[in-house]
Image 1 (cartoon, rainbow, N blue to C red):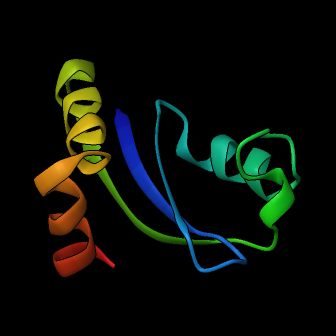
Image 2: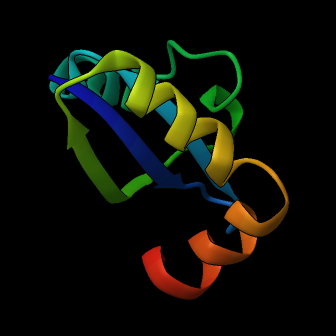
Image 3: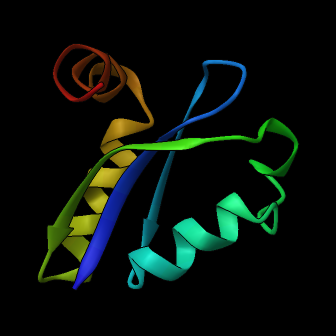
Length: 78
């Protein structure tokens, strides 16, 4: 499976990511091992969804990070 996830960081900002191992990736974030989120701990998992095809997951991740996807994320997912 392939996952797209949204984390809420300490400063109330959000991080959108992709992984094929959600449990391990969230653990890495929480332990401060990810450069982009490590300085904003603690964090919480706000949303995730699973895809069977990698390209669908990466397309959805990209969508959530830009334009109308950013607005969709804020209105419907968090």
